Image (cartoon, rainbow, N blue to C red; front, side, top):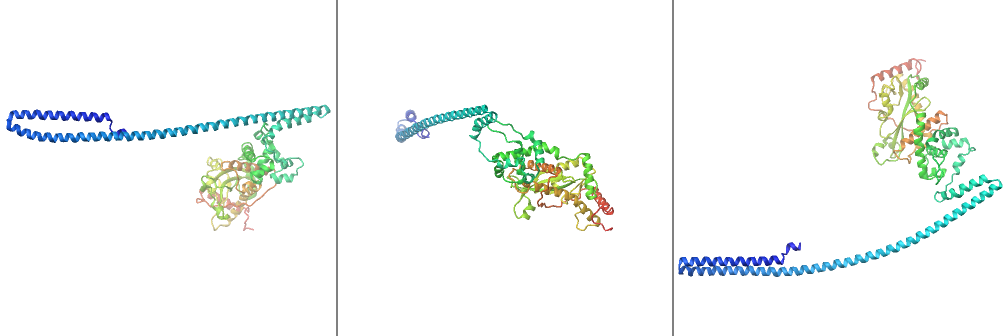
Length: 525
């Protein structure tokens, strides 16, 4: 910026010389013209021309003097500006030199401090290494001493047990105690003993010892872990027990950790691992759609209960409370539970189909709690199976929250019912009661389904699926029932009648029930 505002001294000198040369040439040209005119016009004109030329010459001389004066002033101003800028440059240079000296001094001081820190760190490392070598020497000495004691005991007749104790407690045990926190497993050791009462075991795990042993044997290959040099793996029975006790009681992980003598994160990991193994290993065996032989038997069982033929399942949808999710909060908001409990509630749905014994044959888990039952049904694999024609000629009985379709049989919902319609609703209510009571036993047996759980939303379908599989195992093995209060609100779908053929079929079933004395309400007697 300074070079642009103030011209160089050499440039000013050049301009000054150029102006002088230009003025000289102008004077010479004026003189030549005056002489030529004087010779041509005569002496009088010459004298007049001289007078006029003299006046012009005086004016030009005056203008030149002013220009020269301005140039001299400009040159003087340039010199003053140059001196001022030189002074400013000197001050800036002095300031930069001072800052440089300060930074250099600070860096030298920092290097001195770092050197001192490294020296102290080296001394600490040396001290730590000496302590480590001393501890290692002490450990070796203790191991040698224990081995010597084992050899002496062996010579006296008790060698096997003593040597094993020395090897396990002297070497590996010392290493494990350096970093593994010691926790009490007294409660689990008591439960795992053969003398533990059967009723107490069933109260804690919602199943008997034989059923528990069956589950452990089925899951051994999927959940077993090998021991490492750092620590021993958690046994299979303890892994399964952690998961089942957590599902049965719904207690927080800190209490699970206290009961089984394991870390909180370890217990959480075990619950998810065992639930995943149950879903992968046991679900294909204990929760699947029935084959032809089983379907025939289920039809007979339901017909014996209600008198309605070709019923292969009873369907019900319940809600599982959850903590408010971080995303899509409005989708999981349960308006009906919130209004009834006067407390903001969020939930996910579990739709299940059961046979006449209350054993699940199909489940659909994980859709948001704001969805009505008919929308959950439309998104389920059961609906896809029916759309493919696999449920042709059979009925699945649902509540009034489901639509009447070619394969879904629901009660009449209008206000004024005929005798046959009322009788039909009574009998179909008996089939509905089977699925509802199955969910009552499911939630009563696995208390974690009754309250908001610590499990993340993305892991919850795996846990709920494991609960349904364990429910089936308990039902098949006739484990005692555990009940609870079940409150699920039903909403009649907007389009409740979706099949004219199904409407006629339902009317025919209601007519046959009444006139063959299968209905509970009979006015013929």
